[in-house]
Length: 424
Length: 145
Image 1: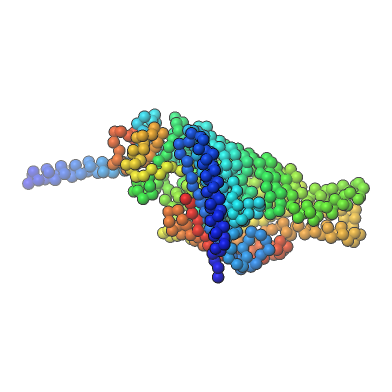
Image 2 (image 1 turned 30 degrees about the vertical axis):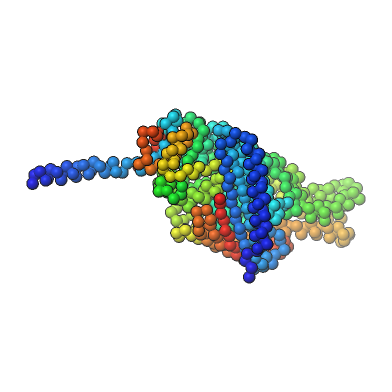
């Protein structure tokens, strides 16, 4: 049984050297500034895991132990330029990231200038993580949370990428209600590929609110973004077929096919994200809960999302034991179904076999994109050193049968994972 | 006999008087004597050492926050008694704070005597000390009793 993949360990080492070279370049760059101190720090999560099922979907564990899916390394440099201005860069190398940064190729997650306007107001501009959810801003840093990974129901889409945007944010801290309240505003642009899907969020505008009164922390995030989204498989396998009918037929029937083409794409539609989270600690107990809702536009292939998790931890000496329950429901809007049904009035089923097949293929997106799943995890975290934690997590996920089978994912999955998380 | 009684009584009176003195500030927060700040509230101290403010409250002066090494007694006492954080939570909080790009963590400067030396040499510095290390050369802006 091979739990540790030595080939990947050598790749990790190579990546670490690449990160150090990046850091060196950055240091040379900032050496021209009159800085008086440079902070170099980093983090690593080395994760190995396997599933009881072989899966077709990328980024998930198979029956063999794999270190690729969740392992990541990060290096950060912060340098003050003067008393109120500083520059920060952070590169993260991930084993798997759904986009062009696969296989431990370092990606720049953070690169921004920070300006301290007053003791309470800070402005940042550059590449920043979008604070969509409670732990979005430090999502690759396994050391900062108890689990091996953040709960996948909420965080999977942004855990592997799509988490950073070219943006500006302003945060204002003040004392209120016996604690610290942080108000934030962020505006930016994201353009990336995610699992073969082109996604552009332009603009993405959010407000966030954090209330800290130890041991209680409350967070609310509201983000709205204008999205363009195109699935590459849909663009190559379905759209050309409908375009042929659109070109060959006269109005008003051709217009029905134009509507079908539009319904396969999301073009400049507004998405709204809401996230509410609570963290509470009481002596040896810790509670985390978060609920998120995404409202998709009524046009195109947007999905309404409802996701949530609840985590309860108990500390016994230096070991934290936890249970985590996650839930998600993704619902594709009816726009595509309605557009295809309209074409049946003009060209009924049975008239054109090729068109019937095309329409059936489009409608098969519904079970694939209407997903619902629940998961239950048990795990532990053992802080063996001041900056090193060992973790184990077993996660049982149940996907609702129709959707999972259509998407090529087994209905029941049990994943075991071990990790070493550190900061330095 | 009366004399012995008097001595014992005096001893108890002195002991009672000494009790508040023995319980006096065990951790103090200090700044350079040339720093215009004279006093900080407990909430200010929490915000400063948790990295939630980027400059001195009220004056807006640049601030360099100094920490003690993790093996010092003052470190544990300061964060658990003054800041109200258990050390295991503090480490995670700081990891999240620094790698989210929200701020810097305090500079680790050694133990009491090293922190004292740095505060004396830097007008922007703020640090915490065991009260026994305080003398007239430093300005105490907060005392924890």
